[in-house]
Image (cartoon, rainbow, N blue to C red; front, side, top):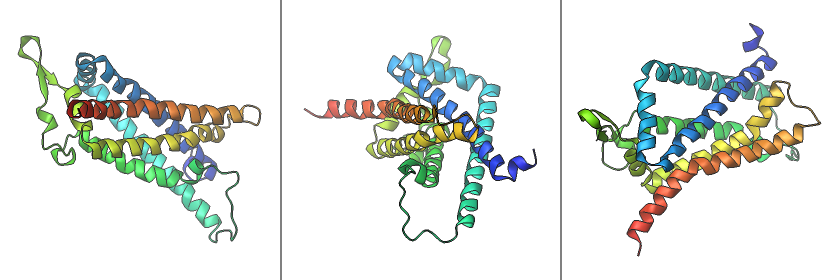
Length: 235
């Protein structure tokens, strides 16, 4: 256990396990978001269920923060170790075997981290200054039977993604996330010792396919909102 956080193999194991947990969250989050296309009632009911179960919600949030912190730490530690092992770059290095995704894991990870912070401020903390609409998302509620209210997540998402700059940044960040996953999912199996020469190529192709599906699933909502907005203002 002590070498888990000190050895290179241990750090790769930590990065793989935390990466697997975060990957499952990304899939689950996309499935939850896609309820947008079922209409306001389905999405708001889903959101109200999550927000009403405070213990479950905060347990998940704290767990995710721990996973992100460990993932970033292990990735940074391994990157520093790689630089220390080769302080002078090859004069004529050509990345014949390494994919673009694998060579840009640190860069894409940093941009994804910046996006996560923005996304939390935008839709979770609901800071009015970052949504570019001039409206407070906290005030968006709908009245239910018996005069009870719940947060109108559907309206918030429509208004939030109607801003081209916000949607553009979202699509860019999701693209980088999926580029990150196109290598990370396969590398996760490698670090856990679950990849060999026989089915390794199939894992590589599956990781790329999963990344494409996730990208299309995540951008579907902002693209749909922008197209609807354009359809309403264009002749």
